[in-house]
Amino acid sequence: MKKYLAILLAAIMVCSCGGNGTSKKGGLMKPGSTGTPYEVLVVTNPENWQNGSLDALVEVLENDVPGLPQSEKAFRVSRVETGNFGRSLKYCRNIIELKLDRTFTAPKFKFSRDVYSQPQMIMTVQAPDAASIVSYLEENGGTIVDFFTRAEMNREIALLKEKHSLFIQEKVQNLFDCDAWVPQELGKTKTGKDFFWATTDRGERDMSFVVYSFPYTDVQTFTADYFFNMRDSVMKANIPGPREGQYMQTARPYVEVTDSELRGRYAQIARGLWEMKDYDMGGPFVSVSRVDEKNQRVIVTEAFVYAPGDEKKNLMRRMEAAVYSLQLPDEIDERNFSYGLEEVEITPE
Image 1 (cartoon, one colour):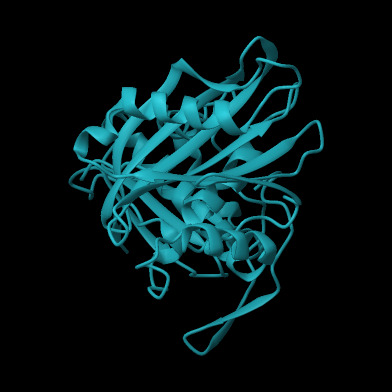
Image 2 (cartoon, rainbow, N blue to C red):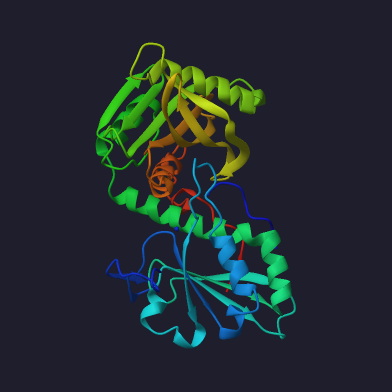
């Protein structure tokens, strides 16, 4: 089993309703899947509720989302015994079937798409016994989280493709010759030198989307220190605080910068916390830096939120989808990119 690829990076009481109507694929009509984003239904035999394998899987799914200032679980998990996995539950958008059987030679993941409804992902996690799957999940459990996170992120990007701010799309095209799909709620914008900012500007539960660019020189452009220094200088110049001398900056000890890949090209991903200098204000952000080879520049897209006292996971995930939606000038006509995020390499069923 290959390690899950970098970048992300989507059943309540047993899968809440909220279908999308019917969908057509391969000439067949399928009902819309039920449930809300980042819900997973786990299906397994009764004995696995007692032997530790189900608990190990749920623990993986309920790990904290990285880059947030507080603990928030990655997925909301519901459980059902295999014998009770009836027709209505089969429409859930994210399903994991946990199977233990001595006929299996080794632990393995595999998946199927749109089996009973659409959009839907069904993953099978199989192993010969509980001990082997618990050990396997300790090492490879991140693959499951990354897989379903990407599935949900691509669903959100698909929704944004159909319904997004045309005004912001036009601004990004005019300023950067790029395309981006951003939620329509972001109604307030600001433009600077090689800089664009769109925000909801509600005072609380704010979502923001930023694009900025600078010349590409060499690979040293993508060190963590270079990123921190560039981001801080851009934000200082363009996102002030409420008083003189206050401005957005990066909370460097709480930020992870990684080398990754997006649509087959290098991408630098930064995820963590921002803060306002000399002011009690901050929150999470995620940014993606990529080289626009056509124009020899670096394009940075970023999302950040401000929601004091509230959970931030879903706000960030929605805005992160907008970040991944951006297409560089030579990508705009390439529409077959899985809405932005490649899937984790897991053997299809």
